[in-house]
Amino acid sequence: MNQIYYPELDETICRETLGNGLQVAVIPRKGFTKKLAYFVTDYGSIHTDFQLEGQTFRAPAGVAHYLEHKMFDMPGSRDVSEEFAALGASTNAFTSYDMTAYYFSCTDHFEACLRLLLEFVSTPYFTEESVEKERGIIDQEIGMNEDAPDSRVFENLVQSLYREHPVRVPILGTSTTIREITPEVLNRCHRAFYSPENMLLCVVGDVEPEDVCRIADEVLGSIPGPAGEKLRPWQEDMTAAEPEIAVSMEVAMPMFNLAFKCESLGKGEKAIRTEMVADLAAEALFGESSELYLRLYEQGLIDSSFGGGFETIDGCAMLLCSGDSQDPRAVREAILAQGRVLAEQGVPEETFQRMKRSALGRRIRSLDSFDATCFRVCAYHFSDFDYFRFPEVYRSITAGEIRDFLDRVIRPERCSLSVVYPLENEGGNES
Image (cartoon, rainbow, N blue to C red; front, side, top):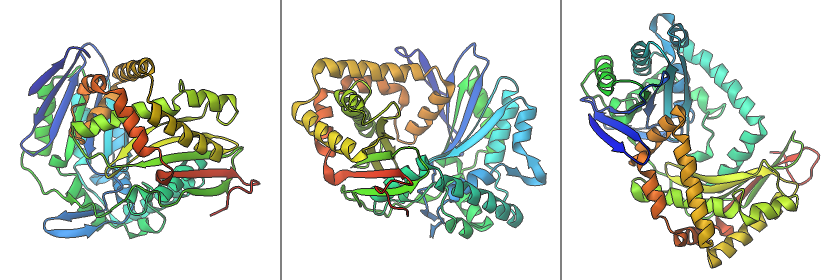
């Protein structure tokens, strides 16, 4: 295996590409009893258009999440969760806009757990009866999401921000689209995106990297399978589709999400550098120690629920903040005004250096978490970047890059505001 040591972080990562195309990353943590494994596919809810074996397909929205649920079914009425529990392990999965991950953590029986993880994720088993039963369960989940103000305010935000990008559609799909999902659709999407060459196996713990590769090779085989090619037909300019959207729900006070539309980052070091610049720009503009945050807090326009950052998804990105406020529009105007100030004057050098040290420190401390480490190694892997190189990227960022980013992004035409008002408030319109 290819082994790289990062002395500043005191971390080692071992990488290998197996004969079937699967990439394996192992982060050894000697002396720890906990072991964590992520088996991840570069496939999320937005990847509905694809080509497979010379044919073009469009899958219904919600398939990636549906697949995540159904992968825990195995032939012979086996219960994967119970099998992990019998091994003393816990298991779970999640679907995001551009990634699906299955994982377990354990202290004992690591090899048996790893074999089980690889086996169930690579074994499609979808019957008409089980798929129909799952439809009702997911439909209930969709209804709960629609009734949850924090989900509704964000989903409204992306619908008002984007015109075409499938981030507009909830990860779960809709009650209409999930009715189009059949065993044939699930099998096709599994065949397209659960091919080993579209996946990453990442393990953190006191394990032998060569053993991880051996087990993966034994369970998955060494012959590459067919792989789908994602199609990205959507086109977006940098203006928000709608400047504002509002609904009324059962909340105690107005809840808002505000975002500025940003260019898609793509992949590689340049993309990751832009992401880290944007993270620092968010901190400079409305982070807890920023001038704007303190002023809005003193004025009573925000409370401790306020926060923000930079989000990147395949094909889109946004600088966003959220919180509770009696006057979300005033918060928006204050952010726009402060953004112009920082774009013109820049961030003071002393403040900028303090922000960089703080951001770097948070990233380094997060490596203490097996889960955070595994997740970020996987996410950055699919962006073609070695995550453990983040310190050198952070250190090379300049204050001028922060100013340029804010100058380009913090503009009214890029901005959209989503608000959930209390039912009795006339500022929102039920939709």
